[in-house]
Every structure is written in C-alpha cells, then in structure tokens.
Amino acid sequence: MKRIHFFALSILAAISLASCGNEDAAQGLLTEKTEDLTGLTEFAPQETASSSATRTTGEYGTNSLSFYWTKGDKIWLHDETATPKLVQSIRDNIESQAQASGVNKVAHARFYFPDTFKKAKYPVRYTGYGNPVGDKVTIKNVQAQAKPNQGEHIGTDGDCGVGVASRGSDGRYTFTLSHQAAYLTFTPYHSKAFSSDVKVTKIKVTANQALAGTFDFNDNGIVLSSRPAANESNRSITLTLNGGGNNGFNIPTAASVTENAAIMVLAPGCYTNFIVQYTIYDTRTKVCGTVCKNYGSIKLTAGKNRRVTIDLCLQRYDRNLYYMWDAKAGEHYWKGVANPPSLLDETNANYPKTSSDSRWFNPADYNTPASYTAKNNPNANELLWLLRYGNAHWDNSTWTIMGHLYRGGMWLKKLDVIAKELGKTRAQMKVTSPNNIDFTKIQNQNYDAFVQDNHTVTRGKPAKQSDYFYLPAAGHFTLGKFMKVGVRGYIWSSTPRPKGTANVPQGYNLYVSESGVHTGYGDRTNGFYLCPAH
Image 1 (tube, one colour):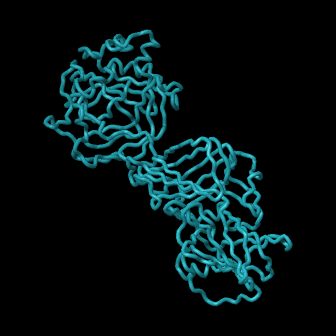
Image 2 (tube, rainbow, N blue to C red; image 1 turned 180 degrees about the horizontal axis):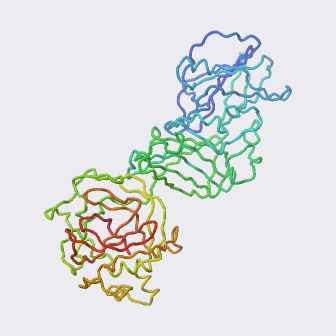
Image 3 (tube, rainbow, N blue to C red; image 1 turned 30 degrees about the horizontal axis):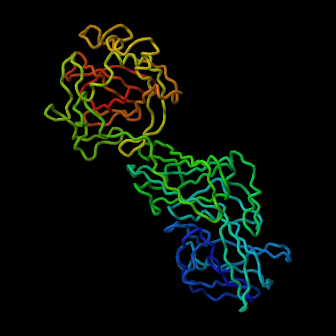
C-alpha cells in the first residue's frame, strides 16, 4: 500500500493505488524542471523500499496487477465545508515525467490543488480517466486493450479508488489510495497448439446481474446498492483485443502473461450464471469460433484481481486418421510426414504413391469386404439407409484440425436407431438397400444406381444427440492435396466397388455437405477421415 505525504504550502499528490496482491517495488521520481507553485498546495510521496507501483494503468506481475499513472489522470479531494465539496486536481506532473522517460506511464504522480486546504484529514477519490464528476463511476460494458498485459484502458473503463489524506507534524499529508473496482486477468491457452494464425480476438463476460453501468461513488468506494437494474446492455462486458475482428492476441500452449494477458474492469459484487466466452479467429481459414465456460456463482471483491486461465479446447480432429481405402491400422495417409497440408488446396509430395508403400489401400477385389481400417464401416447398403433415413442435421459448429479452425459437419442417425424405427434388424439392412438392391453382391448392371442424393437437411444439432453420430467436414486428400476441408466430410464403405472403367480400383463412399448427403464412389487412393462410431 502506498503512503503519500502532502506539503502544506502546495498541493501536489504523488500517490499510488493499492494493488490486489503482491506488488512491484516503487521506482524513484524522475528529475523535473522547476515549476512555479505559487498559490498551490503540494502533496508529495513518502517512498519506501517496499512501496508498490500501483496506479491506473494495469499490468499483471507475478501474482497481482500493478498499476501506473497515465496522462490525463486526475484525483478529487472531498471537503464538506468547501463549495463545491468535491474539488478536482488542476495540475499534475505525469506528462513531464512521461516525456522525460519516453514511456506513456509513470510510477509516481503529483497532483496540484488550490492552496486552500489546511485540515488534518481529507478523503481522496479517483473516479477514472476523463470522468467529470467525483461522485459517480461508470464501468464500461465495452472495453478494449491494444497490447498483451498493458491495461492502459482500465482508467477509462471504470478503474477507481479512495483514500484518506492525513497531515503530519511536518506539514506533509500521507495517504493510500485503494482500488474499488474488481478486475479479471485472462490468460487463455491451448495445450494442443493452435497455428500462429489463430488469435483470441475478444472476451465476453455475462451474468444475471449488472456487471457494468453507472454507480454512485463516495468516500468508501462504489455504492453497490446503486447498481442499475440488470438489462441486456449491462449484464455483459466485452473486452476487445488488439482491435478485434481479424486481429487479436496470440494463444500459447501454456498460460503466459506476456503473450496474451487481458485485463477487464468489473463492478464488485456477487454474481450468478457467470459465463466467460472467448472468441477466436483463424486469419488463414477465416473461421471464427467461441469457447465458453460457466463458473456458476462467483464473488468479485473490490480492489481484488482474479486470474482466469483456461485451455481453449474446441473439438479436435487428428491428422493421423486419414486413410486410403481399408489401409492397415496405423498406416495413415501422412505417416512419417512432418508437415502435411493443413489448409485448403495445400499439397505435400510425400503421399503414398505405390503399392510398395505401407500406407497403400487394400487391393481386394469386389465383392471381398474390407479387412482393416474400413472393416467396421457401414457397407454399401447401409450407406444408402443412412442417406435416406439418417435425418441429416447440418451443424455449423467450429472445430480444429492440424492447428487450424474449420466449421461444419453433419449429424446422421445411427444405424441401430434407424433399424429400430423401421422395424428392421441390422442384419436385414446389411443385405439389402432401401431400393432392394444388394450392392455387396456382383450386380454390375446396377452399381450406378448407388449414386444418390438427399437434400433434405435440418439446420443445427438434433434434439437427441445420443441417437446420432457426427461426421465433420474434414475434407479429403487426393494426390497429396488437401481438398474440400470445411465443405465436405467423407467416409469409406466397407464394400469395394465393382471394377469399372477407372484406372484405379475404387470403393463405395458417402459424403456430406451443407446441401445434403451423397452416396457414390471414388479412387481408393483418396485419403478419407476414419469413420466415426455409427
């Protein structure tokens, strides 16, 4: 806690706001040019080795926020016998220090008032940058921070403090200014590593009570009984980072203050349904997503900072689960390749090219079913049951693969559920399709009938997700090129296609897109994502 001394002949306040935890050691005052202090009263600091540098621009240190003064900060003195009763400082030395040091923040400041204050004690208030009144404080519902761990915005967004100045026998006044807002310092990360192209662009906090708004302010701080009635505007605070939109802060693999500490000012109090939502954006794929956490009930204490750390876990898909048709388990498309394509239309020449490559597809002839990674996939007949009766739901949720953000995928009803609803058994669905053709048998004259589409799609998640499986639009690899990611999701059938005119053996498959479900066939050299449980 900082103590400040006031000289009786002029009023210059060199003050420090009390921090909410361990605080940095105070720094010495810079030498300044001599100023004419005639008619002013000076408040000067008494600094000690253990004094803390805590003012009105925030930075997160080892365990706490440290604050600094910035140009434009002012304080108020409260004198019940004066008119007006609240008097704002008329001069300070912040700008001169900043010019001398070349930085826009200072550890100590002096504030000047008219030479009319002689009492033993005066209440002191700080009501935020640019605030024209000393008895109100406004916590902003829209806040912005330009750089990691540089909370220059907090003075504008609702930071405030109070103290009592006491005059000593030497004519100097001493006081400690204590913070009265509450603070959250966010340090999100992703342990599985996003690409450096993925940024956190904003953080939004919501609750059932008003987090923001204009509050009465007195010598004891924020008057919580004056909290405004909760509405859509004041029940949330949004902190935009580095301008937001396409910009933001980095997301490291472990919590790091220097990488992305984001500081928010809030009204103290008890809150329910306290939700933190992080918006992340991939500057390469142009996909945006959110990660939310509900903390339930929470108490934010005046003058205290809470660090909020979270692993930003979106649904993640593994690059090691793309396979040629029925390749052996573990022999995935990019086995042994350090940097496979991760963006649409990227290419890597190290894809499997010949049957001597262990990643090669199963060359089994029709009608031999799959033996390895596709053996448990739906057979050709079952794919058609999925197409016709899967009750497709397109879900535009965001997910991640190879460090990048993508969105979209289809929920399809599980085959067991379809069978039960239709009064059939799985065994019956395996041996015949809905159009009474068994595509697992040699019927060359009919196999083109397998190519079908169903464009009946519901938007959003199904009500009973346990009856469905989700197929992400994870695209596919053809000749080492990443194709259709974020557009289509493919699965192999366990049934190879009868030999046709193609130069490469083919297999039956199914793909989903926002417009519907399609059954068809393709070269077995294509790398499709491993079929989820169905």
